[in-house]
Length: 176
Image (tube, rainbow, N blue to C red):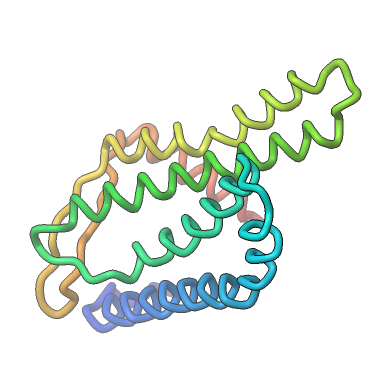
């Protein structure tokens, strides 16, 4: 059985579903922020400001900002700039998650002689996605798609060998 060719209707349907997902994620991030705002006021704004409160606030705002980068309108002149902003916000969020995870490990192992090793290991391993995404970002080609989509198109150029390895790994991972 052969699959139907990729048509403009299927492309448009995928585009619409992607937009629905982006708006849903943004709504979820805003909802989480609104629901927990009273806790933020008690835990952050009514106490002495510290590095921990800065980490909490920046993590919360970066979460909303990252989702906003997925829904904001783009134009033929702003694709590259919006992609750079989205990547920067993503890198900051990954670094924040790695730092927060490292601090949690440090708090759990604060009496151990390995606490600094564990802290450093968690932070470094948590930042691995930054390196892998820089690899993809360096090979990214961005173009503008006009009617009927009016959106930016992102294509990552990788060698055939690397692409074959990635597809082989994906097939092995999803094999039943």
